[in-house]
Length: 319
Image 1 (cartoon, rainbow, N blue to C red):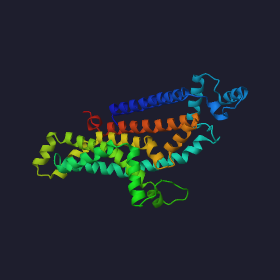
Image 2 (spheres, rainbow, N blue to C red):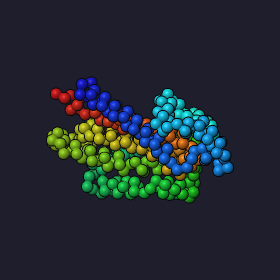
Image 3 (spheres, rainbow, N blue to C red):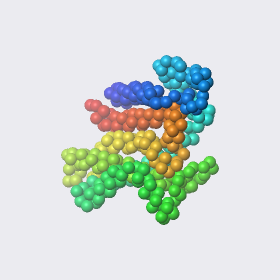
């Protein structure tokens, strides 16, 4: 690895850590300005002032906000996300299974959407400005323009209610085999695929068309290579950097942006877990969930930047 690449990678990692620190501060500050009183919501309206004061002291709510932030952050760095106020359970233990479910859903959606988006992008380039290109662009743009919850309910109505091909809710139970899990998440995967497909497809198309303007592409065409060979063997490898960036960005969205889809299909993931505890004003759970979502998003975007740096031949061979 050249010194230039090593310097750029180190800068991206340092920037990612700084963003994560800033995100943790925003998450903590956001939960502190929520209306209402945590102690009051736990004990109810009939609680006595003495009981409220004792609970606030037990929860550390009487300490300065800056002290509470650094205590929370230091505990989180050690893997201690705290205890849920509503049920007294350890948040990390409760969250582990939910996070696995969300990652499973996101990975399944990525396994479908990423190859499909790249294939459609290549197909659109090969037939650019002709009816296949226009049809692909129109359909994908139409699907991304529809809100996720509407798309989810439409697919649920058609597939589950009318055709009865799949269950209307996506419930994962302990002991389910892999095939049953795939059947359970099929409809959320379809919705998420429609949501992220257009962005990745259009970026793939734009990146390859930009490379197709290069002189070495004309040389490849003059050698008698077919359009598909020219695109796949010469244009695609040199357009990989922006494609990787947009793929990683959408993978981050698949993990972080699944809240609406999980609620629509009653999927037992992080999004549903977060919504349930926001309604209960369980601040430690909201803080921990926000920190996990922010960490996943920042890590995936940092990884995308690093891959783009490593894939750039001008940086790998600066001379």
